Length: 100
Length: 490
Image (cartoon, rainbow over all chains, first blue to last red; front, side):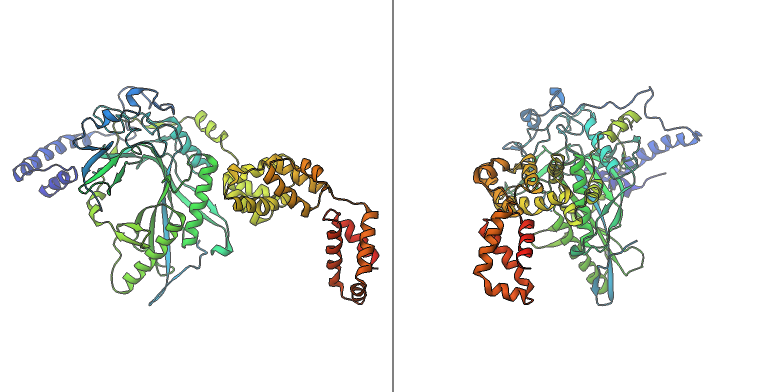
């Protein structure tokens, strides 16, 4: 698999990253290099091998349905949440108008 | 499979409509899908937002067990395949209401697979026969935040309170063929969700909304190209979208155009859909498995607990009511809303007889609540009080007519039926002597009518019954009155 200039530009646009022509050219080479390197994995025969999601036996942990049980992952911290926002407005994030 | 006769009449003949619905149902939980922030509706902006929901760097999602449980219970309620192995994927797109830059969803391995639900026949609504509608899958995903565009001349305001709230996306098969079928499907799905308790079904508050997929074809042809109208938030609007979109597509095709697969928005004020072209590029979602989340694996004990906790569902309840001799119409009315069904079940448990109780609830009680602008959840009369009233009719203590009076007095005073009957002396009498005395007076006073009756004008019997009941102030046992009158007029 290899990608061209147009694909690089599309990926950049989807990721909202502005790139110059020179960067796009450089990126094309770099991305193809990465893809080629990862493609080497295709040489390994994995017939009958289950996909592995972790290198140690581990299962997904679930949380109980309790509000603000841990302050670190709970709500009621609007000031913290808005602290880095460039234009907070009356408790909202203010962003350039986005309307259909 | 289709038995719908709904057709759009075009210039080139009749067209059939094919409909599939993706219903987003907010899972009823205290906390969000991956954080401990609250989910309650109507809070101050951004007060129910954790650092996880605001997508602060380094925060990791940990799934809420209750969301998983409710999705599984919902799947079981539509007899769907439950996948003991499922996984979360990232759906990538940029929008101001999505701080992560991706939505955590389940594309490749959803938690619930194929199931189905049945919509009942409803001749008046254009549904001649019951029909099974397939459900393709149910998956769990995060909701996005809310944008407000009308508060500032150059800015949109973002409230992330809804960001990260758990949704079930319930995807139907393209099995519906008319607006009526789609409306019935949404209503039935809503009823099931509310019975199960996995979603409150409140469409006004956005707890349930539908993406409506519509295409048209000549009957028997292959499926046409579909459009998807997003975020439709009432049954009426779902039906309006289908009708309008089907007509638009037929007109477009017949004038030589082609339907483009696209996302559209519904404008309820103008009752039309319009294209959301600006989002076209966003359809390249670049899904991939979320590396922050291990696969979700469910064990048999968890599934057994989910199944054991399911209540009696609408179809089973309806069958049980029919078995009690309740009419199909009443059974439908009583099972449509879970509150009504629970109230009615309590009434049955308190000793009321099925068919009589069903008639009384759907006519007398619902009528009274309607007049008072209340609903069953704040009914001034409890099921136990209603059972007492119906019991007095059943054992002949009062007549059906008097029961209406007693019910009015119960609504006014909050007193029990038996107490009112005693206090007001409303007990029905089967005292043949008293009734015969009244009958004698009436027949004497209406000698001409007695002649006519005996001459063959039998319809006059009702007149004599009415006069007797009136003279007895409604308290005479109607059956006794009938018998005595027949004897007297022989």
